[in-house]
Image (cartoon, rainbow, N blue to C red):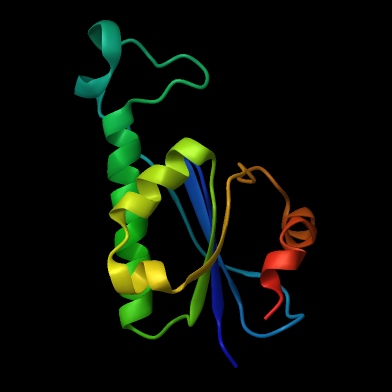
Length: 131
């Protein structure tokens, strides 16, 4: 039985789920959020507007997620991975993955499902979750 990790992320938040076999429920492995450093805020420290996020923070967050995937792979915690992220962040995340970890990714969906409830997420990913 191969465990599949499903990374559902955007530039601000990420949730990692595991599926431990065909037709099994998704289980939450971890949740994390990007940190915005005050010095990186544009225009004298003002809060970013809705939808605006400093690119360097997004790249740093993609790097952190790639490191988490690397660690999980190297410890044998999953056998394949599915990445779900908006196109711009997906590009950043793909750029941060090392070769062996990138090889474990069986599907990539250019969507932002970070606000989806677990049951809805399972339905949206049903085609990707098939072995």
